[in-house]
Image 1 (cartoon, rainbow, N blue to C red):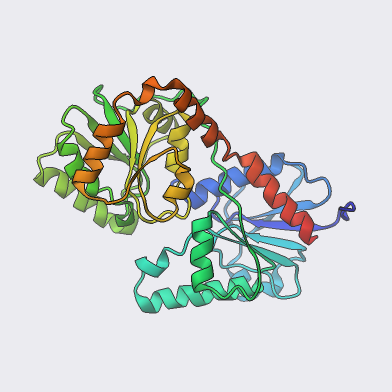
Image 2: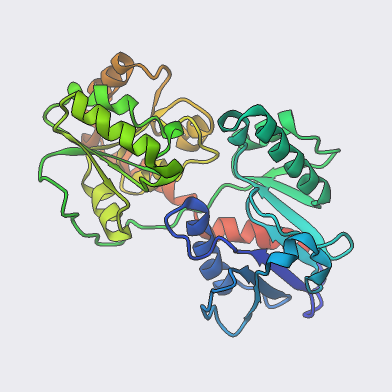
Length: 357
């Protein structure tokens, strides 16, 4: 491709920046760092950030602060050549005629999580964004298929670009204060019903020699599901299941490194980062055969076809003993996890930006 005019401007919507306790916030933080480090000498990168964000992303990055009026009067936005809406929840788009749009879709979970009237409104809004987009991307083949079934792409190709997963295996980590010293299973995610953490409680009755740490933000949906989990733990007299809430990055690394396995029964994943993070440490991953997880686990995880206590327990008892004796398999699992690199992810989007400029 011929060199692009240096004056060309690519805007990346990072308005989730700063909210590191949710997935989109973590992605925004990684994007801010990785795109700034990338080779983009042929165009200007601009980050759309929260109004109160005062982070210096480097002299090469321009900053556009979010203003409420941008959503309703997009003509107030500065001239852009490419605008990247990095997830389906973005609400600010440039006016027609002001640049081309890359629209990234992570999932359509609202179709099952919301009441029909609200789901219909969300779908209508997504259709408008797809209509505005020059390029539509999805984070997995599973998500792409769901989009095709529910959205009129009007002949547009939907491109699959897998999420980048930050390498954390080199971090030393730190032992959480709640760790008991006993062997343990680990799971992590926002404490929402779609994660199916409650299904693990009866499983843990069959593994009294292990603890289970269910880590993540317990305030989701006003903490209703978290409180339900706590009540179930009490009523079932489970002394080996812990719900410690949000943990630090160093604590997460320690838990991945030292756990016996990741247990991940979620049924609402457009991608599913925890299985890949666990695989960076060569860990055994037991996951639901639902949504994107069979695709993302790539044959390296053990999938629960039926989310019954009996099948989940039987699978763990069958596959965990001796798992770590096969060093060749463990190394292959690590290399597979490393293939989901941010370098590959960022380069794929840089190629799209250049294609549109």
